[in-house]
Image (cartoon, rainbow, N blue to C red):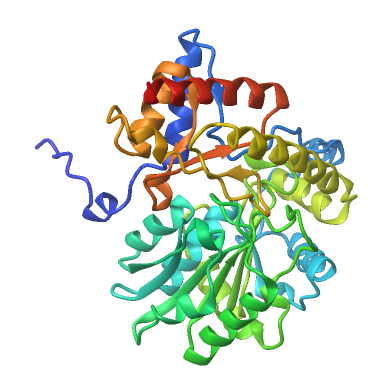
Length: 396
């Protein structure tokens, strides 16, 4: 008997990653010979620092190519907690740490290990695309906290408090934010922690962009007194060290939660790639100057992008305080009726102007697009010129 191709119902609860789809669509046009300017990918255009690459080469040459502990080698876990301690003043033990296959994997593992069907997860919007889907996959219920341009897309404790119920299991914060670049002030993060800890609610802090702050010093809420009891840190080497393809992230959490996450990981990916772990070890222990160099370049690009977007009549933009994204409001382009939302705008922009952006619907809004400025100034100039002409054409 031939098996029927009936896909499990839980898969229908999730969608294809919008950011990856934009990259795939842009790549398809490039293969057809189209000159595409790609603002879609959230990926540094810098090479991985040479010392990190050399550590991986040495791992291959010394035959470090076997399985490791599912949660990463002991030395890598020790290095992760040491780096987090040095950068943020936290005090984790290796038993409260695990290495994962990218920061996304840490978030997936946590939500699958923590969230039961019917549990509520509070997520500020706009939000990173994956949060919603992994909560849905676990059978949880997403509760969105709407932020807006008037507050710089910054979520406040009082806003989160209005959405907490007896069914709330987890609150997710992402600061600096993907897609808006918003940064939650330290004092506000402490208020959020105070609110969640008193209610017995876990707080996930996604620190993917934590080192790319344009104002002030990087900060982790996990360093606050008593935070370790209810805070889970999801970290990533992808952006900080330009290691997106290496796929190494980590989680810091109470030992019991780490144990549950590691149990799941042992039956899914097993360990992160052994060679990538050696590269990650060098990233954690080696020179950190590349991080500052990238931040300085991102600041130049941010200032150019914000200035150029504000030259486009009708487009508004909140200045991002971190990460490497701009999230302009392009609803002015809807007035002529030729496009009605950000999804249609992004589709037409790619097809006609050959500029790839991610539509705001992927992040919970429909009047914005995400522009990644993790690309060269030359590409930023070309792409924003095309964007200006495209919007002008829609108004005509």
